[in-house]
Image (cartoon, rainbow, N blue to C red):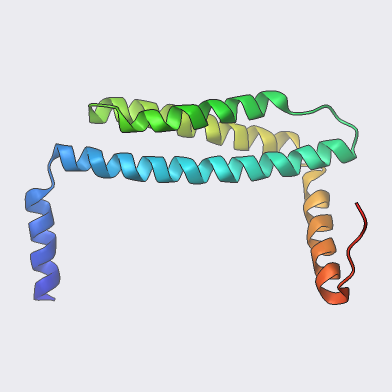
Amino acid sequence: MYNLCSLLLWVAGHFDTRLYLLSSKVQGILWSGADIVIVFVLLKISALFRQRSGKSRIFFRYVLLAGTALLTPALIVVKTPRSFFYLESIICGVQFLILLYTVVVERKGMPEVILSLIGKTRLEKETGAVDPP
């Protein structure tokens, strides 16, 4: 327990604004990258649903997601915690708005597509058969 307390006291004594900004940049890039993957997968599932139901494509949501992907590396070059906060808020805000909009708009047909995908995967594992494309 003493070693843990000593470690925490050492970190607290050496954790300055520069180190805070560096750790925030690393965390922000990792989280934004994970969010991009999550939103992209959800958009792919949504596109599959829209294709099956004959609806139009969701091009604009992909453009917004690409914009956040292009902004994410800019987190490396920000100079102040405030500018980092604003940029990260814009990136995450747009990503979560895409998620929210997609879930609300596609809520009626999305569960069917997900369940059909899960069902096919289980059937393939159980029988070893794969449906032709």
